[in-house]
Image (cartoon, rainbow, N blue to C red; front, side, top):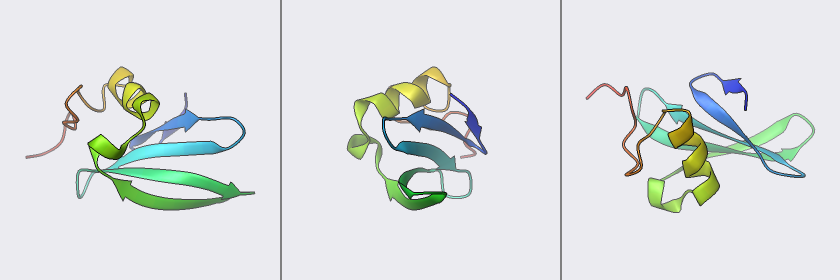
Amino acid sequence: MADFGNGVTLIWTPAVDRIGIDPKTNEFVVFDHTGGDDYHGHVRAWNKLHQDMKNVLIKAKKADTKGNILGAKQ
């Protein structure tokens, strides 16, 4: 797992997908690897994230088990 700005890198074979948190909007941002150095980014709600994405965020202490972003400004 590598740091990706304010997010966490999630590696799936064969593509490398990255998930992060937008600190301005407090949203989960998923970057899908589309080839080479190209990624397509989009926002997902907690309930739309795959379980392994949730697990990575929880383990990195970026979110709790309910999808609350930890350290987010209220």
